[in-house]
Image 1 (cartoon, rainbow, N blue to C red):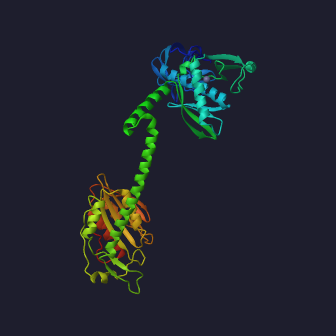
Image 2 (cartoon, helix red, strand yellow):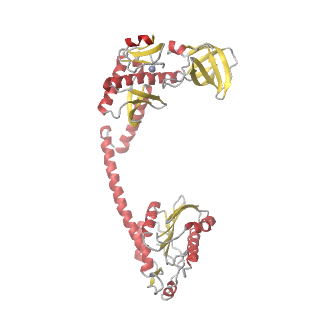
Image 3 (cartoon, rainbow, N blue to C red):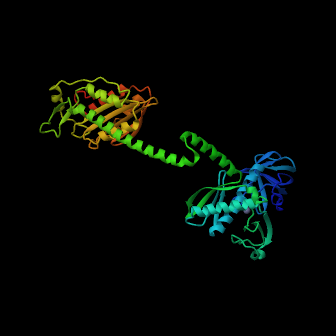
Length: 475
Ligand SMILES: [Zn+2]
């Protein structure tokens, strides 16, 4: 097959053309059209393929194979000759990216003999990877300045074809190993390399290059650039953002960074205060919850055959405590029913040995419901509580969105939530899980909270064979 005539090399500003169809076939990627000549630049050298239309059928991709150019389109073309049109905005964008990349790579070479090892032109950025482990900000600024100076010089971008035996006459930035005809691109006498890409006619058309950021990759440095019209769009966006920040932070432009530092420090101080306060709240609540077992609680030392004291909550929270709690948690959790065990009665009952999943231990059961409490605070309270021995607990936190449940136990309790999981969660349509010693999840906003807590207590008591009802009153 005869090679496709490359119109894009002849006139980089031409948009429309007429051509004859040489071949047309369908493959797995759609219809492929091969023309006798084309303006469509095929993907290559880091530059994406042109977009556009052939007889108003969209061209999705353009590839080159052995100097034959294949246009990928979505449907068959029925005519022998076609009208082609390239997407000029797309073409000009990538001519800017590509020519700008030549300028920048040339500047990297001039500033510090930095070799360009790879280039990527994406939708947002053009990246240039240079062969070095590090580069200073001073050098980066020099590269940007030099490339922009060359834009101001507006030197012609020349494409010339030479033979490989003429290569020694040219001062190439990058060695060329191609044999036969070689296409050279030079930007005045600033930079010269072999390149098959498609370029602007003058460096001034690049308009502007701007460094955005750098990163380390493969032991090299990759530099992100905004080139051409993209750099102006980027400038507009940044101006808009800065204007918003100036209003939000009530600051002028030059003081924005100081203002942000100041805010960051303030946030750190607030975080520290919050942490201290949370710690106090958790201590307060922990003490209060445990007081139910030790304060007005029936308390009896175990007899010789039991291993530890047994504690049963029987008193209600004091009015003073309730007031204190309300200061921290508003609106306060609702009270549930509670049975007070008369003195002596409780003492008698609590001397019973408990058998909890084979462990001969006795536990304090804590049941609590919160309303609109901070989930993290509840979780931290739970963590603080289970540091103590022999605690098993279930807490609910109801917010406007959902209800979260937490079940936990002290490390020394061999409690396996999975044994009661289905029995407890399924009837209440709750989800969640975890691992010893904390399990948590969410329930529907319409969850019967009291029913859930009662069921947990019932299951635990049954399993544990614990006598009586132990209920921590809710503040
Ligand atoms: Zn090029």
